[in-house]
Length: 184
Length: 88
Image (cartoon, rainbow over all chains, first blue to last red; front, side, top):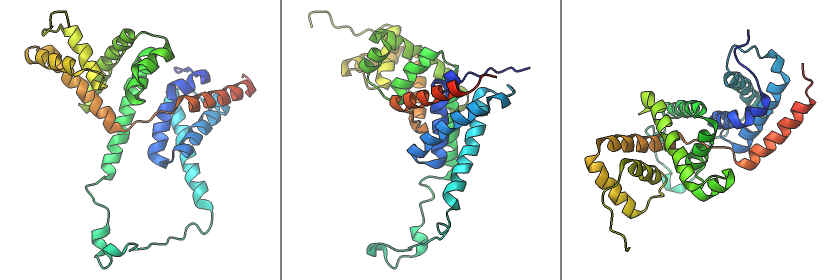
């Protein structure tokens, strides 16, 4: 009764960026995030027979990754003594004597809601990206997100510049259509 | 230039230039002609609006991708693990 197939050979191409972004918004350290993503793939491989095909492959991988993130925080907090918190209220002489209230972070600077919305937006973008044909998604990703120059992409994928722009045009039209409902 | 200067731009070309402007790949002259086109072409105006909206939200999302080397390394490790895993 499995509706969803599992294919580890494609995992990195299909999901690594998505998982990486998911992780980076939660651990905010690039190297740790990379390790966690890698760990997730390896752990997923080991428990492949537990995959029942009820959820999509991506959802399943995310659920493993969530455990990995929690484990990561447990590990770094388990060292005794690190729980001690030292706060220096004032460390520069310029603001000495100021009220503490004036030193709290600006509430309009970045709210939790902002970050949350950003995460959701990221999810939505990856969702739409995964609906594109593979080639379109790849070109779009390289050009738009990674910001490579046209010539670099053309060399890498062995296509002509006009070919690239046609692909970009189709990808952008599809992406705009896909994101329009909720985000424009 | 030798050739006659073109001021009228067909829609497909306008879309192409519009795509290029999203990546700052269009020349000044192309942008001028595009904007002239947008004055009288409603369809392209709409496309242009959606297009820049898309650029904006992708920028806003702060998406990051893993670089190629990192992905290669991950692939190798995963491949190795796949080979070691008995097929059930």
